Length: 420
Image (cartoon, rainbow, N blue to C red; front, side, top):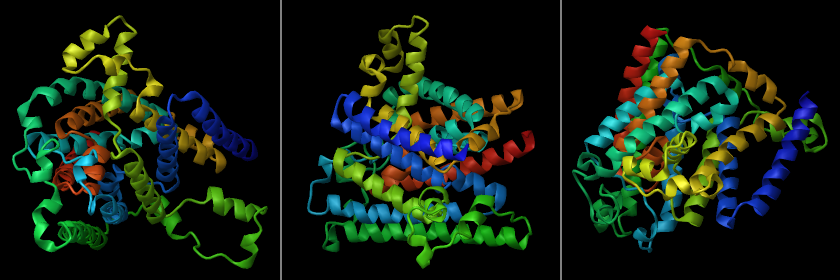
């Protein structure tokens, strides 16, 4: 079985390259597909996701994922300076999100939903392969939540208008572009911005360590099984490892999990390549609402009716799936997950591991999905669109989203613990 899965994995890789190049309408769509595959592969092989930053810490006591995300945020910001320094940042589609009540409520709702579904907007795509019943239920109601939130996002001033702005932020959707605060630093504000980012990351890491140490002292620290496996992975190669035809070499190249830090570096590189090519960051959640609308069209609902409800143009609902850039990228994340599991020979084992689901669990996953979906419309994004990309774009809104997402995640985990 392992050999058959591995062969199929390489067939999928060739199919992605051939079909992507020949079937997608533009080279940019093909590029988006490849980036999505890379993101899905890295997230799966490193066994990391944004939702685990809170859920894993609460359930096991381990804050290693949260600390790794801070490392990823910082290096992404550092690399991003190469795009912005001595350039007009407004030529990029920066995600300088508004700071308002919508951001706060949306972040709390998103964190709350994550605790029930054990995934986020990007994680639900990888989990469609690794935990189909849970992820599919979450995705359906996630899409419903996004769709129901569209009219609020597009019309409500408490979601659209920012309490505070900076000069560059005003040219987008409002909010604060951190370099605007340090224009006097001699390097267009980027020295001050990166130092402030380092400070924010350091504060999160400090409190993460304090929390983990308190769990250790209270003897409630369980640790995470995959983190233990990752910690045991050898990082040195002996002479025998250079035989590329050996099983040992194959395991190192395609099977053994990456450490989370390795995954973070790969994701940061892919993010900056995406930013450089498309001049925009990583988003995931908006298409889910469009997918839900397309589902309603099967039952005779017109695109004009959907657009009138959502307060947006009908074009989004009429556009074919594989002509929407973010939809193609999201599809790539699922394919990238399949590629790793197949080439590692663990696809069937992983796919079948979470096939059993109870009606009570369905209700909880549905609640998690709709909370996350609606929350993304209030906060103008998910864990990638309201957290990672804004932080990488030096938006203060990303850090505010993080703080309130943690609050929502803790509240959700406490409630979930009582219900389950």
